[in-house]
Image (cartoon, rainbow, N blue to C red; front, side):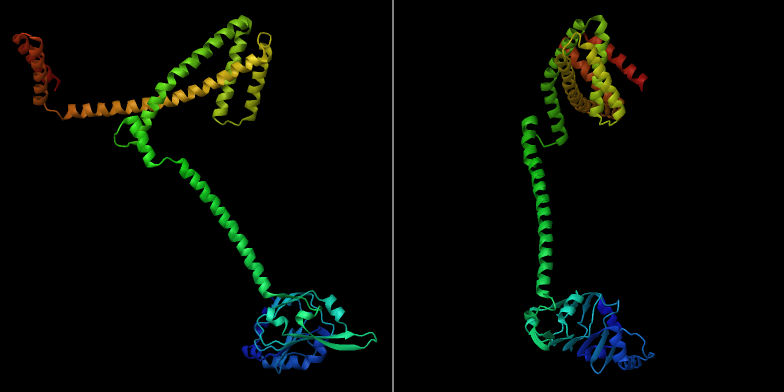
Length: 407
């Protein structure tokens, strides 16, 4: 920002500044070389006569060169709390300045334009003043106005009554910033509301624990909730209900194929088989999300060729119906495989657990315990079926010998 040029000023000079004069470079050098030299001496520096300087300070007056490229962007005069008057001298022109902030200069009461052509001043400068609303009817602007007799008369007007120096109220500027922040907040709130709405939809679509328990009671009775068991039971029931429908559709499709082959005859039977194989490859590539355009193009071309050759025996609608039926059966078969995998996986896990249990039981049991189990079983059989006691003892001795040989 432009007020960085004031970093070299001492604090005493800032608080002591009561009047700021903006001058062109030529006027600045000729009229204020002495003041510039005094200011440099005050800072412990030397300056040759006629040397260009950005500003000078003397007796509460700060002279600023308006031609400097350092005066660009926004110039904030807040570093000068005791500033009372600002003067724009001669044909002053700011080439890079965009605004002068006076909103913090509460003691400022006068702005003077020492130029006999206020229209030229208005045309040559594009900067605006930043002031508070209370300053608009407190700061007086002094300028010269040409009368009909070519006589220049000095005029005095409050800032809110003049049209030479444009200004913006900082309250309005802050209001614009607040409105922009409010708009951003509203946008953020709307975005979060949308996220909350989406989450609520997902929550509504997600089964609750009570719903799982209700489903568990329907499928497994009033047993403890176990998600894996519930899932397997649902798959088993679904497979039980789905299997007849799948077999029926499969048999229907096989009958359609057999009828179509008989209709095609020996000459076109191989073409019909190629048509079905090609269509099946296209279905598989779609299910696996294979985006090989070259392969897809080859398969589609081969399918079209087969359809063209078969149109001597079939209508295009009949061929398309056959392909659609194959695709529908493929989806059913895929669903059937998924259900079977789930049920068979559960049966396999159950069988493995039983096998592990029997293996552990056989490893841990002692010979005496095993002998006791077999004698008890044989005794029960002998009593139940009235087997001769001699046979009972013979069988018992034989089993004992076998057990000892095995161990």
